[in-house]
Image (tube, rainbow, N blue to C red; front, top):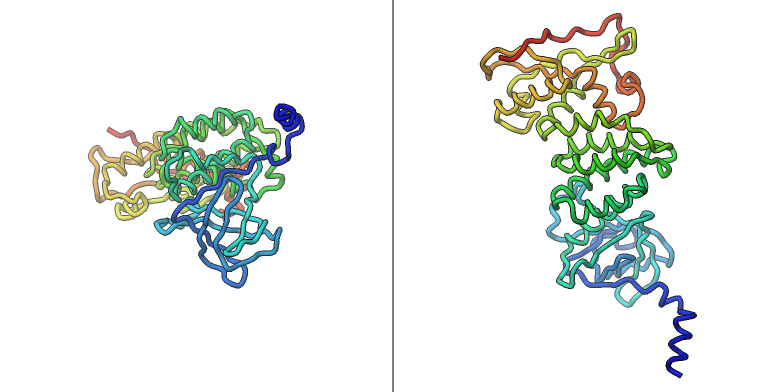
Length: 363
Protein backbone atom coordinates (compact mmCIF):
# COMPACT_ATOMS: atom_id res chain seq x y z
CA UNK A 1 0.00 0.00 0.00
CA UNK A 2 2.84 2.39 0.86
CA UNK A 3 4.54 1.78 -2.51
CA UNK A 4 1.24 2.41 -4.33
CA UNK A 5 0.74 5.68 -2.46
CA UNK A 6 4.31 6.70 -3.23
CA UNK A 7 3.77 6.00 -6.94
CA UNK A 8 0.51 7.96 -6.93
CA UNK A 9 2.13 11.00 -5.28
CA UNK A 10 4.95 10.99 -7.84
CA UNK A 11 2.56 10.61 -10.76
CA UNK A 12 0.09 13.24 -9.51
CA UNK A 13 1.99 15.60 -7.20
CA UNK A 14 0.07 18.11 -5.12
CA UNK A 15 0.37 21.77 -6.11
CA UNK A 16 2.22 22.44 -2.85
CA UNK A 17 4.90 19.91 -3.77
CA UNK A 18 5.30 21.55 -7.17
CA UNK A 19 5.83 24.97 -5.61
CA UNK A 20 7.46 24.53 -2.22
CA UNK A 21 7.30 27.49 0.09
CA UNK A 22 10.43 29.62 0.00
CA UNK A 23 12.59 29.30 3.11
CA UNK A 24 11.82 31.98 5.69
CA UNK A 25 14.24 33.08 8.36
CA UNK A 26 14.37 35.78 11.01
CA UNK A 27 17.02 38.45 10.44
CA UNK A 28 17.57 40.32 13.73
CA UNK A 29 17.70 44.07 13.17
CA UNK A 30 15.89 44.06 9.84
CA UNK A 31 13.10 46.66 9.74
CA UNK A 32 10.75 48.16 7.18
CA UNK A 33 9.40 51.64 6.55
CA UNK A 34 5.98 52.15 4.98
CA UNK A 35 4.02 55.32 4.29
CA UNK A 36 0.43 54.11 4.33
CA UNK A 37 -2.35 53.38 6.76
CA UNK A 38 -3.18 54.88 10.11
CA UNK A 39 0.29 54.33 11.58
CA UNK A 40 2.94 54.81 8.89
CA UNK A 41 6.42 54.41 10.22
CA UNK A 42 9.03 51.85 11.16
CA UNK A 43 8.10 48.22 11.86
CA UNK A 44 10.00 45.02 12.62
CA UNK A 45 10.42 42.31 10.01
CA UNK A 46 9.78 39.05 11.87
CA UNK A 47 10.98 36.85 9.04
CA UNK A 48 11.74 37.12 5.35
CA UNK A 49 12.13 34.88 2.31
CA UNK A 50 12.85 35.34 -1.38
CA UNK A 51 9.12 35.79 -1.99
CA UNK A 52 7.82 37.80 0.95
CA UNK A 53 8.02 38.76 4.61
CA UNK A 54 5.98 39.01 7.78
CA UNK A 55 5.72 42.52 9.18
CA UNK A 56 5.02 43.12 12.88
CA UNK A 57 2.67 46.09 12.71
CA UNK A 58 -0.68 47.48 13.81
CA UNK A 59 -1.55 47.96 10.16
CA UNK A 60 -3.91 45.59 8.36
CA UNK A 61 -3.88 46.41 4.67
CA UNK A 62 -6.79 44.92 2.70
CA UNK A 63 -5.87 41.63 1.09
CA UNK A 64 -4.40 42.29 -2.35
CA UNK A 65 -3.50 45.92 -1.65
CA UNK A 66 -0.09 46.92 -3.01
CA UNK A 67 2.20 49.37 -1.20
CA UNK A 68 5.92 50.21 -1.26
CA UNK A 69 8.09 49.19 1.68
CA UNK A 70 11.71 50.17 2.28
CA UNK A 71 14.02 47.75 4.06
CA UNK A 72 16.36 49.34 6.60
CA UNK A 73 18.35 48.54 9.75
CA UNK A 74 19.53 50.76 12.62
CA UNK A 75 23.17 50.95 11.50
CA UNK A 76 22.24 52.05 7.97
CA UNK A 77 23.71 55.55 7.93
CA UNK A 78 23.78 56.11 4.18
CA UNK A 79 20.32 57.03 2.90
CA UNK A 80 21.40 57.63 -0.71
CA UNK A 81 19.37 55.85 -3.40
CA UNK A 82 22.35 53.59 -4.14
CA UNK A 83 22.04 52.03 -0.69
CA UNK A 84 18.26 51.83 -0.42
CA UNK A 85 16.01 48.89 -1.13
CA UNK A 86 12.38 49.81 -1.77
CA UNK A 87 10.03 46.98 -2.74
CA UNK A 88 6.48 46.79 -3.98
CA UNK A 89 4.58 44.48 -1.63
CA UNK A 90 1.11 42.99 -1.63
CA UNK A 91 -0.83 42.06 1.51
CA UNK A 92 -1.74 38.35 1.47
CA UNK A 93 -2.73 37.50 5.05
CA UNK A 94 -3.26 38.91 8.53
CA UNK A 95 -1.82 37.66 11.79
CA UNK A 96 -2.40 38.49 15.42
CA UNK A 97 0.51 40.93 15.50
CA UNK A 98 0.99 41.91 11.88
CA UNK A 99 0.51 40.86 8.29
CA UNK A 100 2.15 38.76 5.63
CA UNK A 101 3.36 40.52 2.50
CA UNK A 102 4.48 39.07 -0.79
CA UNK A 103 7.04 40.83 -2.97
CA UNK A 104 6.20 42.10 -6.44
CA UNK A 105 9.62 41.77 -8.04
CA UNK A 106 10.93 42.60 -11.51
CA UNK A 107 10.80 39.76 -13.99
CA UNK A 108 13.83 37.44 -13.90
CA UNK A 109 14.88 38.65 -10.44
CA UNK A 110 16.57 35.68 -8.78
CA UNK A 111 17.19 36.19 -5.06
CA UNK A 112 19.79 34.13 -3.22
CA UNK A 113 19.23 35.20 0.38
CA UNK A 114 20.53 32.18 2.24
CA UNK A 115 24.09 31.51 1.08
CA UNK A 116 25.02 29.99 4.43
CA UNK A 117 23.47 28.43 7.51
CA UNK A 118 25.19 31.05 9.64
CA UNK A 119 23.40 34.13 10.96
CA UNK A 120 22.49 36.50 8.12
CA UNK A 121 22.88 40.20 8.79
CA UNK A 122 20.42 42.88 7.60
CA UNK A 123 23.08 44.45 5.38
CA UNK A 124 23.50 41.09 3.64
CA UNK A 125 19.78 41.04 2.82
CA UNK A 126 19.85 44.56 1.36
CA UNK A 127 23.00 43.79 -0.63
CA UNK A 128 21.40 40.69 -2.13
CA UNK A 129 18.27 42.59 -3.15
CA UNK A 130 20.38 45.26 -4.86
CA UNK A 131 22.54 42.65 -6.59
CA UNK A 132 19.56 40.58 -7.75
CA UNK A 133 17.82 43.67 -9.09
CA UNK A 134 20.92 44.63 -11.08
CA UNK A 135 21.22 41.15 -12.53
CA UNK A 136 17.52 41.17 -13.44
CA UNK A 137 17.94 44.47 -15.28
CA UNK A 138 21.04 43.29 -17.13
CA UNK A 139 19.39 40.00 -17.98
CA UNK A 140 16.45 41.89 -19.46
CA UNK A 141 18.54 44.16 -21.68
CA UNK A 142 20.97 41.39 -22.64
CA UNK A 143 19.57 37.86 -22.18
CA UNK A 144 22.55 36.27 -23.96
CA UNK A 145 24.91 37.42 -21.19
CA UNK A 146 22.85 35.97 -18.30
CA UNK A 147 25.18 33.17 -17.25
CA UNK A 148 28.37 35.17 -17.78
CA UNK A 149 26.98 38.05 -15.72
CA UNK A 150 25.86 35.76 -12.89
CA UNK A 151 29.34 34.26 -12.68
CA UNK A 152 30.94 37.70 -12.78
CA UNK A 153 28.73 39.20 -10.06
CA UNK A 154 28.70 36.13 -7.81
CA UNK A 155 32.33 35.09 -8.09
CA UNK A 156 34.39 37.22 -10.47
CA UNK A 157 34.30 40.67 -8.86
CA UNK A 158 35.32 41.88 -5.42
CA UNK A 159 32.60 43.16 -3.09
CA UNK A 160 33.62 46.75 -3.79
CA UNK A 161 33.46 46.28 -7.55
CA UNK A 162 30.09 44.54 -7.27
CA UNK A 163 28.76 47.53 -5.33
CA UNK A 164 30.13 49.88 -8.00
CA UNK A 165 28.54 47.86 -10.81
CA UNK A 166 25.24 47.87 -8.96
CA UNK A 167 25.40 51.67 -8.69
CA UNK A 168 25.93 51.93 -12.44
CA UNK A 169 23.12 49.55 -13.38
CA UNK A 170 20.61 51.18 -11.03
CA UNK A 171 21.38 54.59 -12.55
CA UNK A 172 21.09 53.21 -16.08
CA UNK A 173 17.78 51.54 -15.24
CA UNK A 174 16.40 54.83 -13.89
CA UNK A 175 17.48 56.64 -17.06
CA UNK A 176 15.80 54.06 -19.32
CA UNK A 177 12.61 54.01 -17.26
CA UNK A 178 11.70 57.43 -18.64
CA UNK A 179 11.93 56.26 -22.25
CA UNK A 180 9.20 54.92 -24.48
CA UNK A 181 9.23 51.11 -24.85
CA UNK A 182 11.91 50.94 -22.15
CA UNK A 183 11.07 47.30 -21.43
CA UNK A 184 11.86 46.36 -25.04
CA UNK A 185 15.27 48.02 -25.23
CA UNK A 186 18.28 45.73 -25.61
CA UNK A 187 22.07 46.15 -25.62
CA UNK A 188 24.91 44.18 -27.28
CA UNK A 189 26.62 41.64 -25.06
CA UNK A 190 30.13 43.00 -25.59
CA UNK A 191 29.01 46.49 -24.52
CA UNK A 192 27.22 45.22 -21.41
CA UNK A 193 30.15 43.08 -20.32
CA UNK A 194 32.67 45.86 -20.78
CA UNK A 195 30.54 48.35 -18.83
CA UNK A 196 30.32 45.89 -15.92
CA UNK A 197 33.95 44.79 -16.04
CA UNK A 198 35.58 48.18 -16.54
CA UNK A 199 32.95 50.46 -15.05
CA UNK A 200 33.04 48.50 -11.79
CA UNK A 201 36.34 50.21 -10.97
CA UNK A 202 34.50 53.56 -10.67
CA UNK A 203 34.01 54.22 -6.97
CA UNK A 204 32.35 57.66 -6.99
CA UNK A 205 28.84 58.57 -8.05
CA UNK A 206 29.93 61.10 -10.68
CA UNK A 207 31.97 58.61 -12.69
CA UNK A 208 29.38 55.88 -12.20
CA UNK A 209 26.82 58.25 -13.74
CA UNK A 210 29.01 58.57 -16.83
CA UNK A 211 29.14 54.78 -17.17
CA UNK A 212 25.40 54.52 -16.60
CA UNK A 213 24.73 56.91 -19.49
CA UNK A 214 26.91 54.84 -21.81
CA UNK A 215 25.02 51.69 -20.83
CA UNK A 216 21.65 53.40 -21.26
CA UNK A 217 22.46 54.83 -24.69
CA UNK A 218 23.66 51.41 -25.86
CA UNK A 219 20.10 50.11 -25.41
CA UNK A 220 17.97 50.19 -28.56
CA UNK A 221 15.03 48.29 -29.98
CA UNK A 222 17.35 46.35 -32.29
CA UNK A 223 19.92 45.71 -29.57
CA UNK A 224 22.88 45.82 -31.97
CA UNK A 225 24.28 49.34 -31.47
CA UNK A 226 28.03 49.09 -30.73
CA UNK A 227 28.77 52.75 -31.38
CA UNK A 228 29.56 53.30 -27.70
CA UNK A 229 32.64 51.05 -27.74
CA UNK A 230 35.06 53.94 -28.50
CA UNK A 231 33.50 55.94 -25.66
CA UNK A 232 34.01 52.99 -23.33
CA UNK A 233 37.71 53.03 -24.24
CA UNK A 234 37.86 56.66 -23.11
CA UNK A 235 35.87 56.17 -19.90
CA UNK A 236 38.06 53.24 -18.91
CA UNK A 237 40.97 55.68 -18.66
CA UNK A 238 39.22 58.03 -16.21
CA UNK A 239 40.01 57.90 -12.51
CA UNK A 240 37.86 59.57 -9.87
CA UNK A 241 39.44 63.03 -10.16
CA UNK A 242 39.38 62.77 -13.96
CA UNK A 243 35.64 62.17 -13.86
CA UNK A 244 35.05 65.16 -11.59
CA UNK A 245 37.14 67.53 -13.69
CA UNK A 246 35.62 66.30 -16.95
CA UNK A 247 32.05 66.56 -15.68
CA UNK A 248 32.62 70.08 -14.38
CA UNK A 249 34.23 71.17 -17.65
CA UNK A 250 31.25 69.92 -19.67
CA UNK A 251 28.53 71.23 -17.36
CA UNK A 252 29.99 74.63 -16.48
CA UNK A 253 31.31 75.66 -19.90
CA UNK A 254 29.28 77.98 -22.11
CA UNK A 255 28.41 76.14 -25.33
CA UNK A 256 28.24 77.75 -28.73
CA UNK A 257 27.21 76.44 -32.16
CA UNK A 258 29.04 76.91 -35.44
CA UNK A 259 26.97 77.49 -38.55
CA UNK A 260 27.52 73.83 -39.37
CA UNK A 261 25.80 72.84 -36.12
CA UNK A 262 29.01 71.67 -34.46
CA UNK A 263 29.21 72.37 -30.73
CA UNK A 264 32.22 73.83 -28.96
CA UNK A 265 32.83 75.66 -25.72
CA UNK A 266 34.14 79.00 -24.60
CA UNK A 267 37.36 78.70 -22.58
CA UNK A 268 36.93 77.52 -18.99
CA UNK A 269 39.69 78.83 -16.76
CA UNK A 270 39.98 77.69 -13.14
CA UNK A 271 42.10 78.87 -10.25
CA UNK A 272 43.97 76.46 -8.01
CA UNK A 273 41.26 76.89 -5.37
CA UNK A 274 38.63 76.00 -7.96
CA UNK A 275 40.58 72.90 -8.94
CA UNK A 276 40.91 71.65 -5.37
CA UNK A 277 37.21 72.13 -4.77
CA UNK A 278 36.24 70.36 -8.00
CA UNK A 279 38.65 67.48 -7.51
CA UNK A 280 37.96 67.05 -3.81
CA UNK A 281 41.72 66.89 -3.26
CA UNK A 282 44.56 69.22 -2.30
CA UNK A 283 47.43 67.58 -4.21
CA UNK A 284 47.84 70.10 -7.03
CA UNK A 285 50.60 68.10 -8.68
CA UNK A 286 48.24 65.14 -8.95
CA UNK A 287 45.40 67.33 -10.22
CA UNK A 288 47.78 68.73 -12.81
CA UNK A 289 48.53 65.19 -14.03
CA UNK A 290 44.79 64.50 -14.22
CA UNK A 291 44.27 67.57 -16.40
CA UNK A 292 47.12 66.46 -18.65
CA UNK A 293 45.54 63.00 -18.87
CA UNK A 294 42.21 64.47 -20.00
CA UNK A 295 43.96 66.65 -22.59
CA UNK A 296 45.99 63.70 -23.78
CA UNK A 297 42.77 61.70 -24.29
CA UNK A 298 41.40 64.54 -26.38
CA UNK A 299 38.62 65.41 -23.92
CA UNK A 300 40.05 68.79 -22.87
CA UNK A 301 41.75 71.38 -25.05
CA UNK A 302 45.58 71.28 -25.00
CA UNK A 303 46.95 73.72 -22.49
CA UNK A 304 49.70 76.26 -22.38
CA UNK A 305 52.06 75.17 -19.66
CA UNK A 306 55.51 76.26 -18.58
CA UNK A 307 58.31 73.81 -17.98
CA UNK A 308 57.81 73.85 -14.24
CA UNK A 309 54.45 73.61 -12.52
CA UNK A 310 53.31 76.94 -11.12
CA UNK A 311 50.83 76.75 -8.25
CA UNK A 312 49.68 80.27 -9.05
CA UNK A 313 48.92 79.37 -12.66
CA UNK A 314 45.28 79.08 -13.69
CA UNK A 315 44.21 75.89 -15.46
CA UNK A 316 42.38 75.44 -18.72
CA UNK A 317 39.40 73.07 -18.43
CA UNK A 318 37.84 73.75 -21.82
CA UNK A 319 36.15 70.62 -23.20
CA UNK A 320 36.80 69.59 -26.80
CA UNK A 321 34.16 68.62 -29.33
CA UNK A 322 34.97 64.98 -28.54
CA UNK A 323 34.59 65.65 -24.82
CA UNK A 324 31.21 67.32 -25.34
CA UNK A 325 30.11 64.43 -27.56
CA UNK A 326 31.11 61.86 -24.94
CA UNK A 327 29.42 63.81 -22.16
CA UNK A 328 26.13 64.03 -24.09
CA UNK A 329 26.18 60.24 -24.49
CA UNK A 330 26.89 59.86 -20.79
CA UNK A 331 23.73 61.85 -20.05
CA UNK A 332 21.59 59.36 -21.96
CA UNK A 333 21.47 61.26 -25.28
CA UNK A 334 21.70 59.12 -28.43
CA UNK A 335 21.40 61.86 -31.04
CA UNK A 336 23.69 64.64 -32.19
CA UNK A 337 25.45 66.65 -29.45
CA UNK A 338 23.91 69.79 -30.99
CA UNK A 339 20.43 68.62 -30.00
CA UNK A 340 21.43 67.79 -26.44
CA UNK A 341 23.16 71.10 -25.71
CA UNK A 342 20.47 73.10 -27.51
CA UNK A 343 17.94 71.58 -25.12
CA UNK A 344 20.24 72.52 -22.24
CA UNK A 345 20.20 76.19 -23.27
CA UNK A 346 23.41 76.51 -25.31
CA UNK A 347 24.25 79.85 -26.92
CA UNK A 348 22.39 80.44 -30.21
CA UNK A 349 24.24 79.63 -33.44
CA UNK A 350 27.07 81.92 -34.42
CA UNK A 351 29.11 82.31 -37.58
CA UNK A 352 32.18 80.75 -36.08
CA UNK A 353 33.08 78.49 -33.19
CA UNK A 354 35.24 80.02 -30.48
CA UNK A 355 38.92 79.43 -30.98
CA UNK A 356 40.57 77.29 -28.29
CA UNK A 357 43.75 78.41 -26.56
CA UNK A 358 46.89 77.78 -28.58
CA UNK A 359 48.35 74.37 -27.75
CA UNK A 360 51.86 74.13 -26.42
CA UNK A 361 53.83 70.99 -25.85
CA UNK A 362 54.82 70.05 -22.34
CA UNK A 363 58.51 69.82 -21.66
